[in-house]
Each structure stands twice: as structure tokens, then as C-alpha cells.
Amino acid sequence: NAGVTQTPKFQVLKTGQSMTLQCAQDMNHNSMYWYRQDPGMGLRLIYYSASEGTTDKGEVPNGYNVSRLNKREFSLRLESAAPSQTSVYFCASSEALQMGGVYGYTFGSGTRLTVV
Amino acid sequence: AQSVTQPDIHITVSEGASLELRCNYSYGATPYLFWYVQSPGQGLQLLLKYFSGDTLVQGIKGFEAEFKRSQSSFNLRKPSVHWSDAAEYFCAVGADTGRRALTFGSGTRLQVQP
Image 1: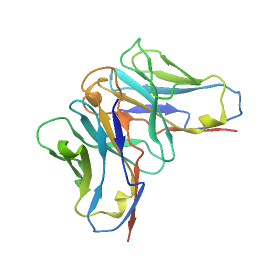
Image 2: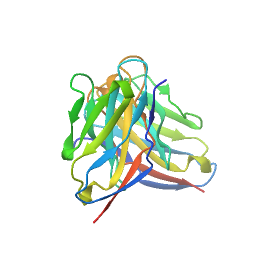
Image 3: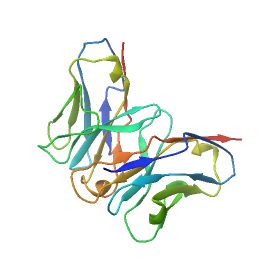
């Protein structure tokens, strides 16, 4: 099925460990995003990539890095995990950055990360 | 900067009753407005979007939303709620220009009573 695939679905890390969240889309979308979802705070943008070869910081980028590996893949890395990074992480993609992505965003099913 | 406010954190309605979820936005130019729904343990699914033209937009699953520029609102409505509508609903605003991704509200959780 066409869409956005995120791996892993669940992960438990110890404080200080590193990990990379993977995201791939097969819709030939230009723009990709990483959001985190926390109770009562909605979705907050971590990083985004308007097009292949570009990345930009969002609202809450501290403690994260990203790589737009190619047009399909956009990974999120936690270099030294902290308990404050316990959250559900969503990757999304869209046709374009502006105008809400033109047709809106397509979301992956999320990665539930717990840092202990 | 663009922002979205969803004043209601949690709403409970009876099955068959009508529903209205509120959304207020802040954006200087013409906004691009969206409603998304999230079922438990799932990602977000697009319900409907407003770009321009008719201020009443129809979406999937029988939902509609009305854009009111004078009130900076984009409220979501459904005439008769079904138990399967229980979920969390997010309003979002996008920019027409510039390097800005969608900004989401904090969400409204809908509970449906039998």
C-alpha cells in the first residue's frame, strides 16, 4: 500500500543512548516532516525537508538531527536520548511545503519512544 | 507566526447527536486550513481542507467545516455522530508562501456515548 512507513513502531532507550528513527515514503512527495506528539500539546514540528537535499529546523529541534537520504527517506536521530524525549514521533510527507502541502500531509503510523 | 487554538480538550456526545468542534487560527494572510482525525494508536488522517472559494467544505465520513474569516474560525461539524467517530481531532493551518510547515492545534478528544 502506498504511504509513509516508519520503523520501529516501539522503542525503549536508556538515557544517553542514541538511535535513528527511519521514515520512507513511496508517493514521490517532495517534502517530508518529523513531528512529536505529547499529551495536551498536539503535534510539534521537529525538523522538515522541503525538498531533497534541504533540511530546516522546526519548533523543537534541540536534541535531534535529521538526514534526507534521498527523495524517499528522511531519518531522525537522537544522539543522546533524554527522558524529555519520551514521545510519539510521526513522520509525514506532502507534495510541497507551501499551501499545507497542496493536498495535505500523509502520516506514518508513528514510533512510540520511551526513554528511561 | 501562525498558530491554532482548539479550546475544547475533551468533548462527549451521545451517538446520533450533532457535533461541533471549535478551531481558531492566527495567520496574517490567507490561511490554508485542515482537519485531521487520529484513531487510537494510529497516524493522522486528513478529513477535509480549505484553500479558497466556498466557505463550507465537505470532507470524508460525513464531516464538514465552515471557514469564517471575520471570526478566524474553522469549526468542524457533523449532523449525527456515530460510535466510530470517537477519536482525537486536530485542526491545522498552513501558509501560502514561505518555508513553513503545518502548525497543529493541541487536539480535541471526542468520546461518543451509546
